[in-house]
Length: 204
Image (tube, one colour):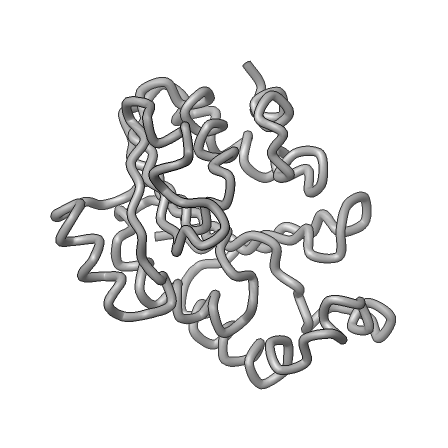
């Protein structure tokens, strides 16, 4: 089964909205039948947890969220074997202790930040969770507004204009400074998708 079909089967916007299968499938296909650990930060309805569950039949899937809009105990995905949930704020240093308390000395082959999608939140989450990445693993930051390459028209996108306190060049520069110590790959899918259809991959 292709990753795009999994996205569509679960009505996951990583597919129909962002077309992220173009980034993920080349990386993930070689791990498809491996016993790996995957962490997704930012769960919402849990749709993408279902995607990873179907696409990786031997993987353990972990989801971390504040679970404000959807309660952990109400999400059907967490009733499946191989899917585990944890309520925690990924931007707080205490989240590291929450993880080790519940999931012990776990390390992840894949970490996906699908959380708050602001430069400051991305920076703090990366600082807290990159240490949980296995050597040779990949850390993906989704739905980035790449302010350093956006045109003036793009910078006037309604969501950015509505939240100037979240999207500023100083905050974005601080985020880049945090991750540029490592090997990065940027994936720009904005042309055929959304203004934030952009992934930054950091390699462990």
